Every structure is written in structure tokens, then in C-alpha cells.
Image 1 (cartoon, protein in one colour):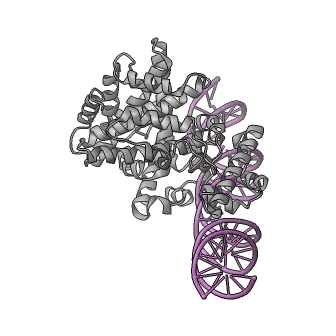
Image 2: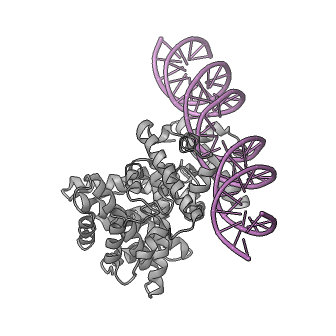
Image 3: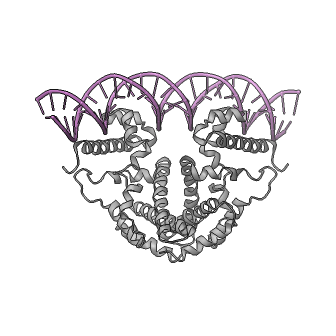
Length: 192
Length: 192
DNA sequence: TTCCTTAGTGGCACACTCTGTCAATAAGTC
DNA sequence: GACTTATTGACAGAGTGTGCCACTAAGGAA
């Protein structure tokens, strides 16, 4: 009961809409399902859907149920410990702590669509881009040069983080995701 | 006259539409210009616009006038010389060789929108993604592990290549773009 | 409880993007 | 010059996303 009623209702509604949508996607395919159908199945108006998520792809990139949004990633950033930052994000994202208002699970039901549907993937890239932008600023504040900060942030975000997440998923999520981060970080020191 | 008439007409038409569109963007802003207006100003039907570019963002990601498309980049790839690959791409992209059917210049008129307009940026990321995917396959064929290949390809594409291009543009395109690639490659060996 | 303020919702109209289809036209071929 | 094929324009229509306004529900104060 930490959150006020309105907040809880909103989170529950968002969660319910996402869950309903992914059910429909699983059944008919992402491209065959319209926002109107999702809204109807979830018992809300299309207008409300757009208020919650802004777009169809927003289902996968809107806090707090996204696994990749800039806001979600922000608290884990420590510019002085980049490998640690990535490991913490991966841990938080792949093994979300139980919260009363945010039931675990839903983000990962949609991982398939994040990686396979071009439109969703593009939306995720936009979210990563925003995270990388903020990260670049942090590095610049620490005195890093513009080019180095930009390349470093983008390498960690787009290369190590998203690359690891994708490979982890493609391998069936069997091995611990942290292993992929470690492998990816090692690969950076052995670039051809 | 190397190309058949149809081909030449098509290239000229594409070039003209892009040029017309960017004129309108510069005058009214990207978001304020509709495809219908672009088509009308260029003297073609909206349907033809979509046949050429597929989408409004396609203006910036469709060969041969894009600077970042997978097809455009493909011929420069040499998996055994990655730094060289990037330098060749940057060279080809920032200083396109004069071709009779492909007047120089147009791609760079739109660079501003590529970096500033979220929708265009997302489309460019999708193109980069495709390039990176192909590149990952090439590296795998050379015996590289899945994770290493994926991270390496993404690091070079999203980190070094796009990062350098962006920084070069942000700095006013004064210094040679190759310098930024060199700086970025150096940064990879000095990651925090 | 009651009143009041504010946030959230639904419904409507509308602009815009993008696709399927088909007839008309232009280019390439023999 | 006739034939084949690619390209175009016009039209209809589905789907996404936004502005607007009245209505309902929540939070706070007396």
C-alpha cells in the first residue's frame, strides 16, 4: 500500500493491457492485431491505450514494464564502474525484484517481439539511444572528450548491453545473462 | 549512358523528390510537411512516392541516396580489416565519387534530419541494424564465437561508425571525418 | 459526510501514413 | 510497328495517432 490508489490502478491497468496485448500477439501475430482490438480486449478505449503507451510499440518501451527504457536504466548507472553498471542493469532487467505493484514476468513475455518485430525493435533502439545520450553526458562531465564519451557510451549500450541481451535470448535464456555481459566485455579487449 | 533509360529516369526522379522534400523540410520543419505535399511539389502522386521510398523516413534510408543503408555499406566490408572497412565507408559516404546518374551532395543535405528527427533516426538505426546483422554473419563465418561476433559488429557499427558520423556533424564537419574514426578506434582501446 | 479540486476516461472528429487494386501510359524487345 | 513488361496515377480503405470536451472517480479539507 505504499503507492496511492490512483498510482496502483494505473500500474495495474498498464500491466493488464500489456498482458492482454501479448496474448493477442501470440495468438494472431503482432502485425495482425490492431490497437482497437487490444483496447477492446482489455476493456479500455483506444484513446486510453494511447494515453498509456503513446503508440503500439510503446507497449514494450514504457516504464515501468519495459526492460530497456532510459528511466529504468538510469538508477543503475555509475560512470566510474561501467562493467558493474551493465551487470547491475542486466540483473535488474532479467531478474526483476518482486514489487507489490509491479508483478514480475510481463517484460519478458514480450522479448520475442522486441527482437523480431522491426517496429518494436526500432522503438527499443530509440529508447537505447536516449539512455546512451544521457550516459554520454555523464562521461563528459567526468572530463572525457566528446568523441571518446560518445563512442564509449554507444559501445556499452548498443554493443555490450543490447548485444548480450539478444544473444542471451537467442540461446534460449539458459545460461545466466551475466555470463554474456562478461563475455561481451572480454570481447571488447580482443577486437580485431 | 551506361544505365538504361528507365533506370536513369528512376534515379533522377528519386533525386528530385528527395531534393524537393528537403527544401520543404527546411522551410516548414520535418513534422509539418506531409507526404502528400512532397509528392505534389515534386510532381508525382503520393502512391509513387511510397513506391520509391516506402515511407517518409525512407527518404533518408533508401539506396542509392542514403549514406547509411546496408546495401550502400556492403561492398566496403572486409572482415579481415575492420578499421579499414570503417574508413572506407566513411570516405565513400562523406565524399561520394561523382557518378553520372547520382549527383553528389543530396545525402548530406539531410544529415541534420537524420540526427535530429526521432522518426528518421529510428529508421537509420534499423538500417544500421541490418548492416550489423550481415556483418555479424561474416564474422561468424570466420570462426568467431556468436557473442563476440555480435558484440564486435555492433560496437563497430553503432559505436564507432554512427558515433563518429554524429560527432563529425556536431562539430560542424570541419575536420576530416576519418579523424573521428581514428579517434573512435583509439577510444576502443582505452575503455573505462 | 459533504463539498471541492484534480486526475483520469470515453467518445467523437479528424489528419496522416501506408497498402491493394486496376486501368492507362511509357520503355524495352522482336 | 506490334508485343511485352515496367511504371504510374487515381481511388478506396484500413490503421495509427491527436485534439477536444463532457463525464466520472479519487484525494483532500471542513
